[in-house]
Figure 1 (cartoon, rainbow, N blue to C red):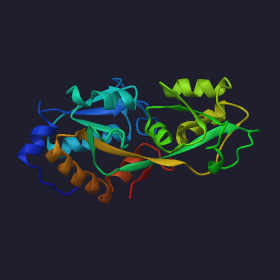
Figure 2: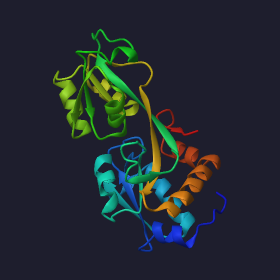
Figure 3: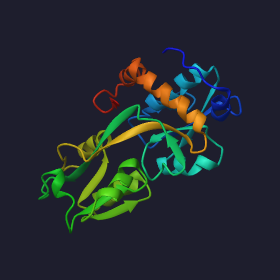
Length: 245
């Protein structure tokens, strides 16, 4: 990547302790694909944080969160300097996001015998959608579903369990995760297409405008230089994750 200048103000906002503390969402199995020997997250998101730290010339501390909601809630607790998280309007009140560096499809899992055959048939009275409410795709459903009943849960496993127990007609989630669920749960199938693309970005506290402006330039360079594409290939998530336009 080419050298992108950073102002003293932006650097002070990004690394106030001299270490870049990067909030990582462990709940996204496409961006965090495992743990290393020391138990730290491995995947596209951790490597994006490391690349940013390398550009800044500072060490990186990964700060893991079990869910995106927990990561977003911690924005004002001064435990992370940048958060790698899905960019959603509900979060933009407190987090300034870059444009996305990658996108992930979100879709629906249904019972094989369900009368629902297309995406458009999900949002109708009587249909119950099980979804982790604070995931980016859950926030999308909250904004856009008008007729179906939204059964929002506190975690992805809880949403899956609710669907598996027959408490919901549809399970919403990231395609990569639902493919695995469909293989495990006999008598289920994925709907063709997607209802949303979850846009993964880098965020900073809303008041950190200088840092946000620098990160915007850095993310665009990370895409155009091929860095993001190379990380997708490195971690074997081609087809599950795509470089954002």
